Length: 293
Length: 293
Image 1 (tube, chains in turn yellow, brown):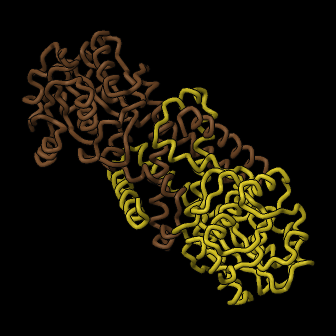
Image 2 (cartoon, rainbow over the protein chains, first blue to last red):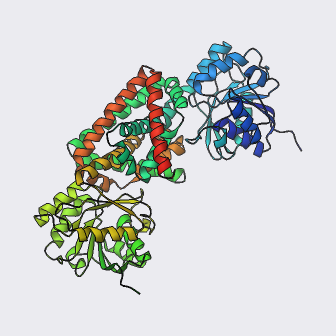
Image 3 (cartoon, each protein chain N blue to C red):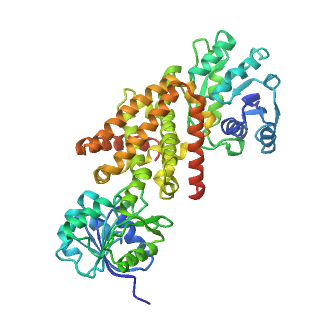
């Protein structure tokens, strides 16, 4: 049997994403030992019992020892603190990567902690997830046929990028590269803005006088539409702060468009309404046609 | 074998809802003959071939002859025209009902056409559907464990209400009664507003410079969130006009809340963001807990 792709993988933050990455690599036979790290000993113990990780440490500086790849799978607001903890002890051959939903903030964190962004740091973002969180929700198939976006910096070594690409491909993902700021704009549009709308909608309804009854009469469309409002509030708080500029821009663009639509409803402008709905349906049907329903 | 609940059912508009009602009643053995009616002969022919209806007419006045129940399953903007066509010929024992997503406009149509809302008119709204449309998308199970809201007027005969209640219960639905205007407010909140947001979001993204790329990087959350933007534009145009007042009110309430959330993102107000996301997640999780995920 040939050597696995990774001898020792250290995953800091063994939740939905970190846990699913561990399971996927294990299933692919692509990893030797998996060391988990986190602050919650009970969760880490559970991850061991589930066979997701082999052992754990609660101190990041201890956890990264001897690892060939370290994955930061913690909320965006915790990235810098972890980097500060591991920077002094990291092996210079060890590759550092992350799974954060915003890339500009993580690159800024790395630049601040490591002074220059290190050659073995590969910022990454798997476009996958569910509204669940925690290691219990993790599963090996989460990344299959999903995109993983790598946003290497000018200083990132091509061999480091190639290694992280192989790691995600072993999980069944399709890996692409993108410029950091462009990543953050695209994700603000397709993920961060929709989450704001879902949270705002559910909150608007929940605060209405007859909210109990309103939810009683909600149907399947509402359930689908609001699924992402069940996502982890702390994680989304961090995303809002980390992708502040791009998100504010998208919120403003959307609010303008919604105001125009509301005005069209107000003046019963049939043409405007029909044209908007037809354009949206065409775009959405085309998107789904490409992405299998 | 006992007589079926309905001897002859006339369904005007044999699409997703009308077709599914026909299939469900047939499967339950609750109907003798089903007469379909519509303007598109080809679609009606297909409905016959699929066994959804027994025969069809393209003239509503002919179709309703001898029916004990007539169901109007046409877009809201066509209700009045059909009522005008059938009013002169409807048997006085025949019960007239509809499946419109807005009830105030249908009641107003009936009041205008029949002068006083007739005793055998039972306004109804099954809270069920998919983003699909047309008879090919219809299926017998669509209404199972779904709510159907009846909004009888003061003039509606209790026996007529009881009969339409039985019809929907035969389809596996749970039937409730509600006051007309209250129905329209509740549906504006749980259905009409979410559709506006989904349409507006997809349209905002589709009109951005890099829209192709943006849709390329959308994931599962986006697909769920925007599913309802694939709904029939004509139908939703009619709903906007028919539920104008309640929808405008909801759009304004939501826009105010979204502006507050956007302001909180802008000033990086951690407390506001976390509290909003936590409230929304709790409300959404509670809704799903009650409604089976």
